[in-house]
Amino acid sequence: MPTISLCMIVKNEEMHLARCLDSVAGLADEIIIIDTGSDDRTKEIASGYTSKVYSYPWKDDFSEARNYSFSKASMDYCMWLDADDILEEAGKEKMIQLKQSLSSDIDMVMMKYNTAFDEEGRPVFSYFRERWVRNSPQYRWVGAVHEVIPPAGSILYSDIAVCHKKLKAANPDRNLKIYQKLIAEGKYLEPRQQYYYGRELYYHKQYEEAISVLEAFLLTEDGRVENKIEACSVCASCYENLGREQDALDALLRSMSFDLPRAELCCEIGKHFLEHGNCRNAIYWYKAALQAPKKEQSGGFVLPDCYDYIPFLQLCVCYDRLGDQKLAAEYNEKAGACKPYSQAYLYNKQYFENL
Image (tube, rainbow, N blue to C red; front, side, top):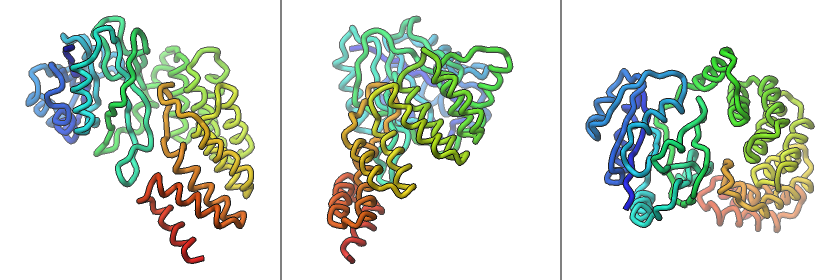
């Protein structure tokens, strides 16, 4: 059975750390915690779980800190978690079973990362991340921000999910400042970093600059397809905020020049037409979303609701506006089958019952 080093970098995580480590108790053969400058009880809490707690000066580079944590690992595989991550009990049991059965030729295990949830705790934003990585110098982190270990070797995809559940907000300016510092120092941003830099600009409502950065990224020959599709979506949101609605639609349609339509983009296009009163066009795109394959292993962000619940609910709205209440009610029930607790579904159900 392979052995696992849990490698973490932390700073001022007294609110999260014990919850995280308790959730993976008994799973890791070694716990390594790198503290990058805490001034709360983080190191004290960490010391209650492992003797391998190290201080490391923060250098505005996440990959450098994570690689330092990996350098301290002595087991067969390195596993990473953020302090505000947890492994739910069912996931823990699956992970223990995987550890017992993992083939020795596997270099990397991809696991789901659920980062947003609905009112019932079901994931609404998910993507695969490299969670277990063979302890070898060839598997190391790259990227000062939004760091990643480039997929390589023999890769196993698992349906085990790690849940990212913050109890406090992070510094919203940190990532953008790191990118701006890199640029000021004349550092080159490779395509993936360009994409994430554009996203950070969008989050900070610097829409014109975000479009400029993302357009440059879209014109490069390098860069992952999923990042390019998502860049089109971010550009569309920027254009919408600037009141340039046709440009927003063009950006969404441009995404299909990179690959087959994603349900997430189909829903955005459907929303555009619905908001402009063009229900028939909206219906086309929401139905397209229902037909779109869910490419979970592509590395892109997946919004599960875009593949069933949202298009069903919006088709209900479209058909109601077109005067076909029977068909509208049918689509509402389909939405309800996905989320019977949904307030929108329950409201619509009452509405149709009162007609």
